[in-house]
Image 1 (tube, rainbow, N blue to C red):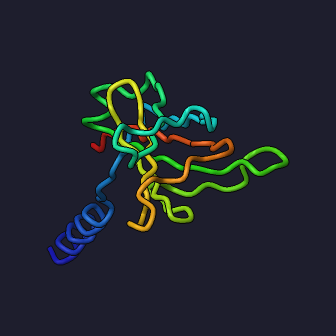
Image 2 (cartoon, helix red, strand yellow):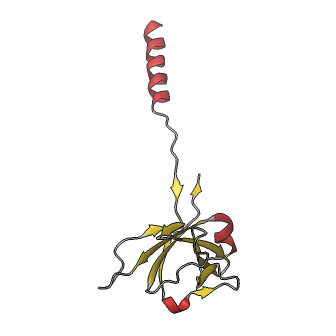
Image 3 (spheres, helix red, strand yellow):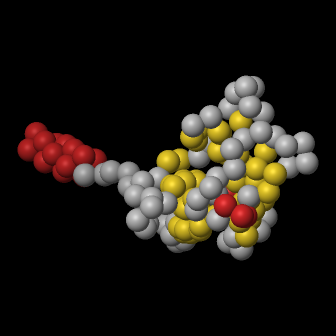
Length: 142
């Protein structure tokens, strides 16, 4: 009887110790990255003279994306010789100007505002700025 009870306890102990909980992450939609350049002539000064804005039309930004997913925006000034070398995430302060963005269905608006009150009108960019927009997909965890 002792041998059967010991055998039964050993089998039960092995069976219970092998159980584990698995978290399965189904990434059905990959993140999307969009790279866009804004030329100096694309910046528009607001009527009150406090903000330069540039609108980027991005068809992947829809109501579902705005409600359920995430948007990351990075900027890089193009060096004299060619392509962008490094990116800074927005919101970002460059010199005395603050760069920020807002997302709306169908696009994204990048804004430049003065950081301090010494000069209320921000400096208009004089060269190309490259923006990298990462649309972070919603992930279902089961």
